[in-house]
Image 1 (cartoon, rainbow, N blue to C red):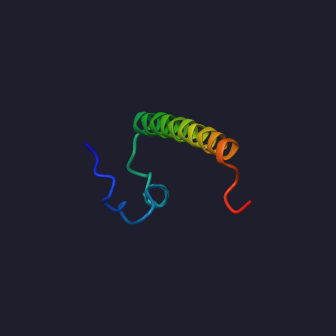
Image 2: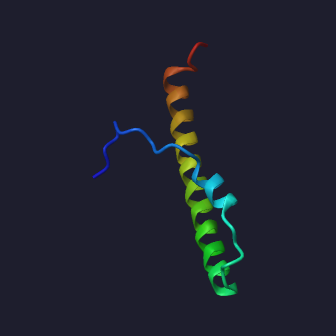
Image 3: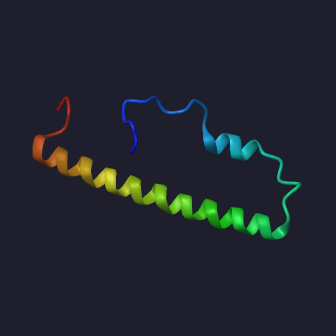
Length: 67
């Protein structure tokens, strides 16, 4: 079970991945990495769409904050 009051880890995971040396990876390992990253992108996009829809529903019900 997640603890929502715990702070998120510092640092950006995408930045750490971008800085990693890809030289030691084989072609198969690179393909597997690409598949994992594409799956993560799809997961993030789905979550973004879900939260945008939730926010739009809240704004239509309660109005825009400050507006």
